[in-house]
Amino acid sequence: MAAKHQAPRGTRDLLPDEAARWRVAEAQARGVLERYGYGEIRTPMFEDMELFARTSGESSDVVQKEMYRFKDLGDRELALRPEFTAGVMRAYLEHGLGGRSRVHRLWSMGPVFRYGRPQKGRYRQFSQINCELVGSAAPGADVEMITLFVDLYEAWGFANLTVKVNSLGTPASRRAYGDKLRATLTPHAARLSEDSRRRLEQNPLRVLDTKDEQDLAVLRGLPAGLPKMLDVLDAEDRSHWQDVLAGLTAAGIRHEIDNGLVRGLDYYTRTAFEVHDASLGAQSALGGGGRYDGLIEQLGGPPTPGVGFAIGLDRTLLVMEERGLAAEAGETVCVVAMEATRAGATALVRELRRRFRVEADVESRAFGAQMKAAGKSGARFLVIAGEEEWARGEVALKDSKTGEQKAVRREALVAELAGRSSLQGTSKA
Ligand code: AMP
Image (cartoon, rainbow, N blue to C red; front, side, top):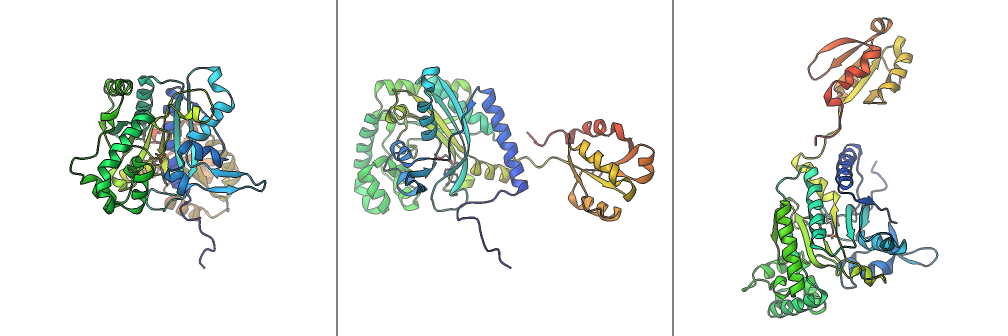
C-alpha cells in the first residue's frame, strides 16, 4: 500500500546512517569553532517578518519570493528564518552585547527555510553553520573569518579549496558600479530573462546572481567583460581590500578574485567570499559570506561593523558523501547469548554499552538465529556467551574481519575491546 503522506516538497528525512554522518561532521565543526574561540548563540527559528524584509533588502530574491511568511493566531506577521544573520543581530542588540565587550565571535547551527524550486542541493528546509565576528572593521577580522571558513572545510577533509573573493565597497561605490553595470548590460537587455530585465532597472547588481543559463551566456559573452567592482572602490575600501588580500596570502589561504561575486543579500559591504564545487552544477555554492558594516545600524543600533559567513551543510555533506569524505559508522559489537546465559548477558550488554556500540537480541531468539542476525548486521566483533565458557567466567570474542576467536575473561572484556583501536572512534578524520 502506498504511504499516505510524504515529506513536504523540498524537505527530506535523514535516516540513521545519514544522520550519523551529519553528527560526525557537526562535531568536527564544533571542534574547529571552539578552537577559534567562537561562542554558540541559539536564536528562534522564526522572527518578525519585518526583520528579514529590512535586513535582506526588499528587492532580494529571499524576501520577494523565498520567505515562508505566516500569520500566527495572534495575527502577528512572522517568517521562518531564511538565514541566520538577521536574527543573530537582533539578539545582539536586544541583549546589549555591544555594551558588554567590543568584539563578539558567535556561531549557530540549524535549519533555515527558503521557498525555492527544489533540486539537487537545493531544498526548502536546509541546514547552515553560521558565524559572525561583530565589532571590528579591521581587515584582520575578514582574514580570520575566511580562515575559519576554510578550516571548517579542511576539518571535513576538503583539500586545495580556492576561495573566491571580491570587494563590494561602500553603498556609494556599489551604486556607481550598478550604474556602470546597467550601462554595460542595457544594450543586451533583449536577450536577458524577464527577471534580469526587471533587476537591471531596480538593482542591477542582482543580475549577477542569476542562475538562468541564457543570462549567464550573455554575461559571459560581454565583449569587454563585466565592469570591475574593484575599479570603482574609494581609497579607503581599496586599502582595506589590499590588506585583506595580503592577510589571506600570509595565512596560506588560496584565493582568487571573482568580479561577478556580489552575494544574494543587500546588506553586504566590502569583502565578499564564496567557495564552490563543480560537482553541484548550477547550485555550486557550498558556502559564502562577507562584511556587513551597515546592518546593525539599519536595525536601529549604533554603527557596528561585522563580518560573517554561512555554510550549507546539506550541500557540503552531499559532496563529502560523493568523495568518500563522510565518516562511516563506527564498528559494532554484537553479543550473542544462549538460553542459560541470557539473563547474565543482559548486564554484560549494559556494561559494554557504556563504552561501545552494542547490538543484542531482545526477542529471546534461538542461538542459531542470533548468530545469523549477527552475521547479517555487519558487526565487527562478536561476543558469544556460551554456556560452558560463561560457567568458567569467560566469553568467546570473535573478530569477524580476521576470523580470529579467543576466550576472554568477562572482567577483562572491556579492556580487550578498548584495545582494538577500530572501536575507539566513529570518525575517519
Ligand atoms: P546564502 O546565504 O544564500 O549564501 O547561503 C549560504 C549557503 O547555504 C549556500 O552556500 C548553500 O550551501 C546553502 N544554501 C542556500 N540555499 C540553499 C538551499 N535552498 N538548499 C540547500 N542549501 C542552500
